Length: 115
Image 1: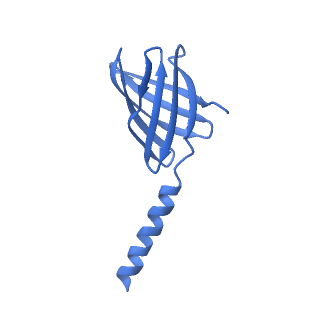
Image 2: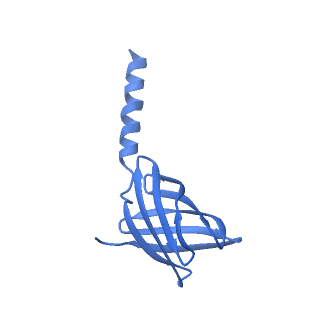
C-alpha cells in the first residue's frame, strides 16, 4: 500500500513539474554584444527544445535543446565560430541568454516577436 502511494506521489509530482515549462514557443530577436543580430524560432515538446537560429552566419539548426521550468539551453554550430552553447531563462516575453565565445562570457536579452 505504501509503495502504491509513493509511486502515485512521484507520478503526480513529475506530471506537475513537466507541465510547468515556460512558454518559449515562437520567434525571438535580440542583439549579441549590442551589435550582432540574432534570432531564434523555437518549439518546446516536453523538455525538448527544437528550432532554428539565424544570424549573419545564416540559418543554423538548434541542437541538444532543453527546457526545464523557465531555464533553457541549446547549441548551434556556427560556420564562423564552431559549436556555441547558449543557456538562459525565460522571463515572460524576455529571454536572457549567455554564451561563452572564445573564453569571453557574453550575456544578452531577446524579446518575443509578437504575431
